[in-house]
Image 1: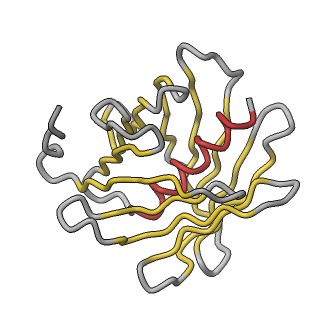
Image 2: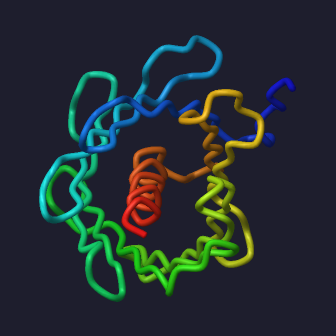
Length: 169
């Protein structure tokens, strides 16, 4: 099955899991298959990660508590300023929900099946990020579509956080 095109105005990336202890991802441009971002998960008691650009510059840092209830993650920019805070509701394998509070106070919602890597993040009622494994033939590979005006680094930080939430279940 061929990969359908991204919605008009959206940016698409192919995300490939790398074999690493901290849960790393290479983020590729689907047209060239060149790596444009790297999501570098870190080992430790707390969930930690860095989203890096192609020049290996850290753009965002993710740090969270995935052992407690509720599970929470904070996303900061390269200077350490908090950008977003994720909070997971009680886990359901059928339909998962998370709240993402941006530094501006705007709330985004994540709804979908995170176990199947099939979910959407909305701001208001408008989708801003979609993640799907539906069209991919390789198990640890999926598609992330990012809406206009959404920073890809933030979208990738959210994607990594959700992946870690699922791993900790």
